[in-house]
Amino acid sequence: MEALDLARWQFGITTVYHFVLVPLTIGLSILVAIMQTAWVRTGKEKWLRLTKFYGKLLLINFALGVATGIVQEFQFGMNWSEYSRYVGDIFGAPLAMEALLAFFLESTFLGLWIFGWDRLSKKLHLMSVWLFAIGTNLSAYFILAANSWMQHPVGTEYNPETGRAEMTSILAVLTNNTTLVTFPHVISTAFLVAGGFVAGIAAYWLVKKVRANKDDADLPMYRTALRFGALVMLISGVGIIITGDIQAKLMFQQQPMKMAAAEGIIETEDGAAFSLFTIGNLAGDDPASVKHLITIPGLTSYLATGNFDDTVYGVEELQKQYAGVSDAADPVVPALPDYQLVDENGADVSGDLRPNLAVTYWSFRLMIGFAAFAAAVALLSFWFTRKGATPDKPWFSKLAVWSIAAPFIGASFGWIFTEMGRQPFIVAPNPSAMGDGVDMVYLLTKHGVSEAVSAWEVGLTMVVFTLIYAILGVFWFRLIRRYAQEGAPQVEYTEPTKDDDADKPLSFAY
Image (cartoon, rainbow, N blue to C red; front, side, top):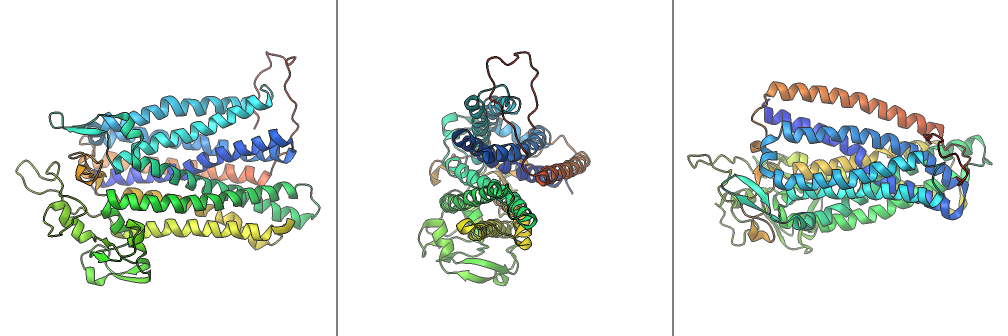
């Protein structure tokens, strides 16, 4: 394998691993803040115990998320130095804002929240957890702004003298329409992950308690947590559907190749159907072999344009349009300019501009499938807790615990679809003829890898990172399982007063 292939594998492994942790931190930070708010407003001890319980699990996840995220920054400068040289003027700005504004905000107030239980008043302490949660979500916005620019470059221009993309408007980058749609979609996904996490653990304890003692005093607390998590899952599920539909239509305008790949559409179709299952050669070498099974007529066209009868170009036609050899009367993408597509002698070096169709097609379906499964478990949770009931079926407990993984896996496949569907571009082409895109600003992935690293060096670091992440993953799982199995702690809370010793050392509340 060449350095390019190994660098892509390394970044993919570390990114997916990091992204497994990110949505739980984003969603659970808000849910823990809501739990603490409920305690402050109602004074009910169950909300304080749930805050402490899920707060501890949040801290474990947050710590590992920070540790794994640091590696991402180094890869931009080491394995992908050519990419950083080309887009650093734009891509670095939101990442710097994330570090200086969002991360400092969340880390500062996270510290106050951890150590301030017996030093801050209820309302001031509550404010600290909300500011931590806001900082976490603000951090997500800046990172998504950077990634959305790669999907749809705006607010920039190409400088032929330096061979770099240079920023013309930070406001345009931060208000990119791709960002404005992607952010609520990702946040909805984060709430689905966090809701499933809360509900799954609560279901485990609810069934365990009711089977041991039907009069256990903790039953109302865990039942509340189960219904709260399930409600969050259902609301976020609706949010995912709405934002996903908007995102699909925007994706069709900006990256029609990704839309065609997501549906395995090789040849152009009118009223394109949505297939639940496909067999055949998705590589596109033999279009006649591709058979779409169990289809929903016209749904792909509707997802793309809002009309069940509209045309959806296939990947073969889009390849021709990008290359400027299409005979289509109404092409959806203009031909790409020669920048980075020809060598110094004018020879075409672009190659195949189609993404990996099999990965794109199946990751899209697995994303939807796992999210739908999680929503079904949420509905089942409501059914078993209706009219004050408490479930006592062991199979429900096992199902709820195992279903915790479903939103995590679905979110990971969604990220794989987003990134792999953009290939072979690391910065997707968005010519100005398509709307607010920018001519000449795009970059093939093979031109973004560092020229100074060898395949051996990248391969070695990939193996090292993978092993370290695997070890960290074992510690993460064991810590989460250990403290989840301890259950919600008994808590004695004393309101701090002005007479408290000012020199009293800070105490770690977890």
